[in-house]
Amino acid sequence: MQTMEGLARQWLTAIGENPEREGLVKTPHRVAEAWDFLTKGYHEDPDKLINSAIFTVEANHMIIVKDIEIFSLCEHHMLPFFGRCHIGYIPKGKVLGVSKLARLADIFARRLQLQERLTNQIARALMDHLKPEGVGVVVEARHLCMMMRGVEKQDSSMITSAMMGSFHESNATRNEFLQLIHQRAMA
Image 1 (tube, rainbow, N blue to C red):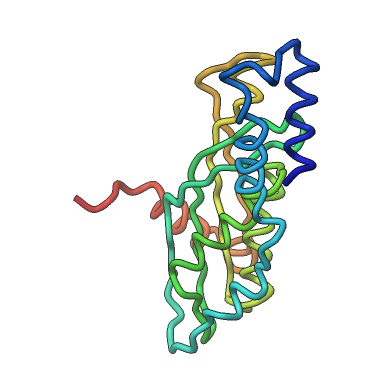
Image 2: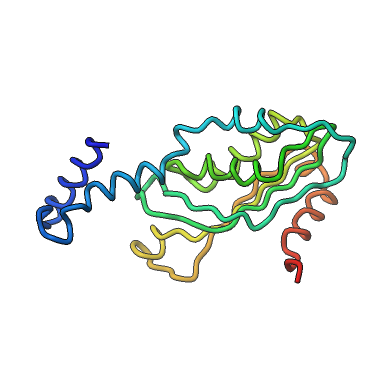
Protein backbone atom coordinates (compact mmCIF):
# COMPACT_ATOMS: atom_id res chain seq x y z
CA MET A 1 0.00 0.00 0.00
CA GLN A 2 2.85 2.39 0.80
CA THR A 3 4.38 1.80 -2.63
CA MET A 4 1.12 2.81 -4.34
CA GLU A 5 0.85 5.87 -2.08
CA GLY A 6 4.39 6.90 -3.03
CA LEU A 7 3.63 6.43 -6.72
CA ALA A 8 0.47 8.52 -6.40
CA ARG A 9 2.48 11.31 -4.74
CA GLN A 10 5.04 11.15 -7.57
CA TRP A 11 2.25 11.24 -10.15
CA LEU A 12 0.71 14.33 -8.56
CA THR A 13 4.10 16.05 -8.62
CA ALA A 14 4.73 14.98 -12.24
CA ILE A 15 1.50 16.62 -13.45
CA GLY A 16 2.41 19.85 -11.65
CA GLU A 17 0.34 19.44 -8.49
CA ASN A 18 1.41 19.86 -4.90
CA PRO A 19 0.69 16.63 -2.98
CA GLU A 20 0.82 18.65 0.27
CA ARG A 21 -2.06 20.90 -0.81
CA GLU A 22 -5.06 20.59 1.52
CA GLY A 23 -7.31 18.79 -0.96
CA LEU A 24 -4.55 16.34 -1.97
CA VAL A 25 -2.93 15.38 1.33
CA LYS A 26 -5.00 12.19 1.68
CA THR A 27 -5.29 11.54 -2.06
CA PRO A 28 -2.31 9.13 -2.31
CA HIS A 29 -3.85 6.92 0.38
CA ARG A 30 -7.28 7.04 -1.31
CA VAL A 31 -5.69 6.24 -4.68
CA ALA A 32 -3.86 3.24 -3.20
CA GLU A 33 -7.09 1.92 -1.66
CA ALA A 34 -8.98 2.47 -4.91
CA TRP A 35 -6.38 0.62 -6.99
CA ASP A 36 -6.31 -2.21 -4.48
CA PHE A 37 -10.06 -2.61 -4.99
CA LEU A 38 -10.05 -2.05 -8.77
CA THR A 39 -7.40 -4.75 -9.28
CA LYS A 40 -8.52 -7.23 -6.63
CA GLY A 41 -9.10 -9.84 -9.35
CA TYR A 42 -5.37 -10.56 -9.37
CA HIS A 43 -5.71 -11.91 -5.83
CA GLU A 44 -8.85 -13.99 -6.43
CA ASP A 45 -8.83 -17.51 -7.83
CA PRO A 46 -11.53 -18.28 -10.43
CA ASP A 47 -10.88 -22.03 -10.10
CA LYS A 48 -11.52 -21.93 -6.36
CA LEU A 49 -14.67 -19.82 -6.86
CA ILE A 50 -16.13 -22.20 -9.44
CA ASN A 51 -15.19 -25.40 -7.62
CA SER A 52 -16.92 -24.13 -4.46
CA ALA A 53 -20.33 -23.92 -6.12
CA ILE A 54 -20.75 -26.71 -8.69
CA PHE A 55 -23.97 -28.66 -8.27
CA THR A 56 -25.05 -31.90 -9.94
CA VAL A 57 -28.43 -31.66 -11.69
CA GLU A 58 -30.37 -33.40 -14.39
CA ALA A 59 -30.72 -30.42 -16.67
CA ASN A 60 -29.84 -29.78 -20.26
CA HIS A 61 -31.71 -26.54 -20.89
CA MET A 62 -30.11 -23.18 -21.52
CA ILE A 63 -29.25 -21.19 -18.41
CA ILE A 64 -28.68 -17.45 -18.82
CA VAL A 65 -27.74 -14.67 -16.46
CA LYS A 66 -27.89 -11.36 -18.25
CA ASP A 67 -27.17 -7.73 -17.50
CA ILE A 68 -24.34 -8.42 -15.07
CA GLU A 69 -22.72 -5.04 -14.47
CA ILE A 70 -19.00 -5.01 -15.11
CA PHE A 71 -16.34 -2.41 -14.43
CA SER A 72 -12.78 -2.85 -15.60
CA LEU A 73 -9.65 -0.95 -16.59
CA CYS A 74 -8.25 -1.03 -20.10
CA GLU A 75 -4.66 -2.20 -20.05
CA HIS A 76 -3.58 0.30 -22.71
CA HIS A 77 -4.50 3.54 -20.90
CA MET A 78 -5.57 2.27 -17.45
CA LEU A 79 -8.88 4.08 -17.90
CA PRO A 80 -12.23 2.48 -17.03
CA PHE A 81 -14.54 0.58 -19.28
CA PHE A 82 -17.93 -0.48 -18.06
CA GLY A 83 -21.06 -2.17 -19.26
CA ARG A 84 -23.01 -5.40 -19.12
CA CYS A 85 -22.06 -9.05 -19.38
CA HIS A 86 -24.45 -11.80 -20.47
CA ILE A 87 -23.55 -15.42 -19.74
CA GLY A 88 -25.34 -18.54 -20.98
CA TYR A 89 -24.58 -22.22 -20.98
CA ILE A 90 -26.23 -25.59 -21.52
CA PRO A 91 -25.17 -27.94 -18.72
CA LYS A 92 -24.33 -31.60 -18.97
CA GLY A 93 -25.09 -32.62 -15.39
CA LYS A 94 -23.33 -29.74 -13.63
CA VAL A 95 -24.46 -26.19 -12.92
CA LEU A 96 -22.80 -23.29 -11.17
CA GLY A 97 -24.49 -21.31 -8.40
CA VAL A 98 -26.08 -18.29 -10.07
CA SER A 99 -24.25 -15.63 -8.01
CA LYS A 100 -20.95 -17.25 -8.92
CA LEU A 101 -21.47 -16.29 -12.57
CA ALA A 102 -21.49 -12.62 -11.57
CA ARG A 103 -18.52 -13.15 -9.24
CA LEU A 104 -16.61 -14.91 -12.02
CA ALA A 105 -17.16 -11.93 -14.33
CA ASP A 106 -15.90 -9.63 -11.54
CA ILE A 107 -12.75 -11.66 -10.91
CA PHE A 108 -11.64 -11.25 -14.51
CA ALA A 109 -12.94 -7.66 -14.82
CA ARG A 110 -11.00 -6.49 -11.75
CA ARG A 111 -7.70 -6.76 -13.61
CA LEU A 112 -6.10 -4.67 -16.32
CA GLN A 113 -7.97 -5.99 -19.32
CA LEU A 114 -8.88 -6.04 -22.95
CA GLN A 115 -12.60 -6.53 -23.41
CA GLU A 116 -11.91 -9.30 -25.91
CA ARG A 117 -9.80 -11.20 -23.38
CA LEU A 118 -12.29 -10.65 -20.56
CA THR A 119 -15.10 -12.14 -22.64
CA ASN A 120 -13.03 -15.17 -23.56
CA GLN A 121 -11.71 -15.76 -20.03
CA ILE A 122 -15.23 -15.98 -18.61
CA ALA A 123 -16.35 -18.42 -21.32
CA ARG A 124 -13.19 -20.54 -21.10
CA ALA A 125 -13.41 -20.85 -17.29
CA LEU A 126 -16.98 -22.14 -17.53
CA MET A 127 -16.18 -24.48 -20.40
CA ASP A 128 -13.15 -25.95 -18.63
CA HIS A 129 -14.80 -26.47 -15.23
CA LEU A 130 -18.40 -27.39 -16.02
CA LYS A 131 -17.76 -29.24 -19.30
CA PRO A 132 -21.15 -28.06 -20.59
CA GLU A 133 -22.64 -28.66 -24.01
CA GLY A 134 -21.80 -25.06 -24.80
CA VAL A 135 -21.14 -21.58 -23.43
CA GLY A 136 -21.92 -18.11 -24.72
CA VAL A 137 -20.67 -14.83 -23.27
CA VAL A 138 -21.44 -11.37 -24.63
CA VAL A 139 -19.97 -8.19 -23.16
CA GLU A 140 -21.25 -4.74 -24.15
CA ALA A 141 -19.10 -1.91 -22.80
CA ARG A 142 -18.24 1.76 -23.10
CA HIS A 143 -14.57 2.68 -22.94
CA LEU A 144 -13.47 5.97 -21.40
CA CYS A 145 -10.17 5.70 -23.30
CA MET A 146 -12.25 6.21 -26.45
CA MET A 147 -14.72 8.68 -24.96
CA MET A 148 -12.51 11.04 -22.91
CA ARG A 149 -9.40 11.10 -25.09
CA GLY A 150 -8.26 10.01 -28.53
CA VAL A 151 -11.21 10.03 -30.94
CA GLU A 152 -13.60 11.33 -28.24
CA LYS A 153 -16.65 9.38 -29.45
CA GLN A 154 -19.20 9.74 -26.65
CA ASP A 155 -21.87 7.35 -27.90
CA SER A 156 -19.59 4.51 -28.93
CA SER A 157 -19.69 1.08 -27.37
CA MET A 158 -17.98 -2.21 -28.04
CA ILE A 159 -19.60 -5.65 -28.18
CA THR A 160 -17.57 -8.84 -27.89
CA SER A 161 -18.71 -12.43 -27.82
CA ALA A 162 -17.20 -15.80 -27.05
CA MET A 163 -19.18 -18.81 -28.26
CA MET A 164 -17.92 -22.28 -27.41
CA GLY A 165 -19.26 -25.78 -27.94
CA SER A 166 -22.87 -25.86 -29.16
CA PHE A 167 -23.09 -22.05 -29.01
CA HIS A 168 -20.36 -21.95 -31.65
CA GLU A 169 -21.42 -24.99 -33.68
CA SER A 170 -25.20 -24.50 -33.79
CA ASN A 171 -26.79 -21.44 -35.34
CA ALA A 172 -30.06 -22.27 -33.58
CA THR A 173 -28.44 -22.41 -30.14
CA ARG A 174 -26.45 -19.24 -30.73
CA ASN A 175 -29.53 -17.40 -32.04
CA GLU A 176 -31.67 -18.52 -29.10
CA PHE A 177 -29.05 -17.17 -26.69
CA LEU A 178 -28.72 -13.87 -28.53
CA GLN A 179 -32.50 -13.42 -28.71
CA LEU A 180 -32.96 -14.17 -25.01
CA ILE A 181 -30.28 -11.76 -23.82
CA HIS A 182 -31.95 -8.96 -25.77
CA GLN A 183 -35.45 -9.57 -24.45
CA ARG A 184 -36.80 -6.93 -22.11
CA ALA A 185 -36.54 -7.61 -18.40
CA MET A 186 -39.47 -8.85 -16.37
CA ALA A 187 -41.91 -6.13 -15.31
